[in-house]
Amino acid sequence: MAAPPRTALAKWEKVRSFALGLPGAGEEFPWGDTVVKVNKKIFVSMGVADGSHPLGVGVKLEKEALRAHALSCPGAEPSGYGLGKAGWVRIPLAGKGAPSAEVLCDWVEESYRSIATKRLVAELDAR
Image (cartoon, rainbow, N blue to C red; front, side):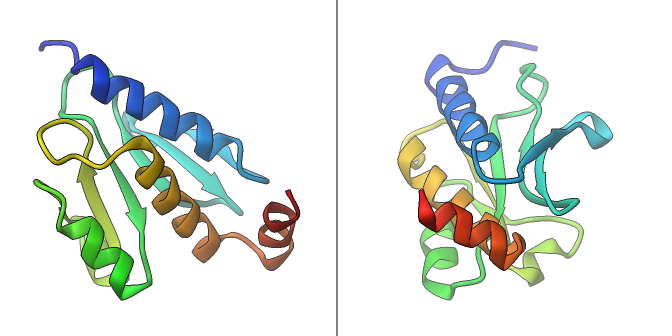
């Protein structure tokens, strides 16, 4: 399959780097996908960057306004396997109207805050 578009890949790398920079964050590869976890729980699903699937990220957005904004992006949808009911949204990184890396990083931070311990959130806020 073709390589992902360069702009989408640059966004993917920026979001991944941001997520890994959050306190206590670590990367794992269940099912071959890239995920970033805190407290052994996923807070962002990055999918794969090998061009076998369109690039996108999955984040947990508990605040209704943020979730609605994310779902307004072209191609965005509630995450599969029932995760959408818990606030998880899958957002494509390529295409017209795709969110900027900065917006995606804001959503990743929001997802992190919903999963991380109070101590780790306090550490983030102290930065």
